[in-house]
Length: 194
Image: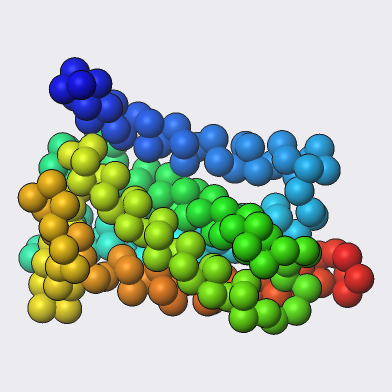
């Protein structure tokens, strides 16, 4: 078991970046083959752009502003921090799309046709669950951990490291922004009856 955990930890960034890099390829394949609605492809890029809104500032603060660290790397990054910005924003786009799938499963029927509380709440809950999963995965993979600050207190500790408020707050707001953007974009891409 310890050997498997160490293999996972020593390959964490490789796995992380592979998933991030493959996400747009998989989404594009699903889009081109008609396995997902037309609006999914542009919404992936909306999710990517929303992800950039926190990935860029967090990485820049960490790398450029002395004392501005938001997180610390447990294992050093094997690449320039700009790669993390792109790969994690690609991840974010995929996480938002998984929120659409979650809403479809939970709320039954077509999604993003009109505002529905069930969809919005599912997006929010999915955002919270995925944020916790990502943070706990990074801790167990000995990749990075968010630094506690007065504005970023710990919620609880996992494997001796803090799981903090900041990412949960981001993933409370981000799904709301994404949901309302998706409601506007879907009819634009597919037409009002799409």
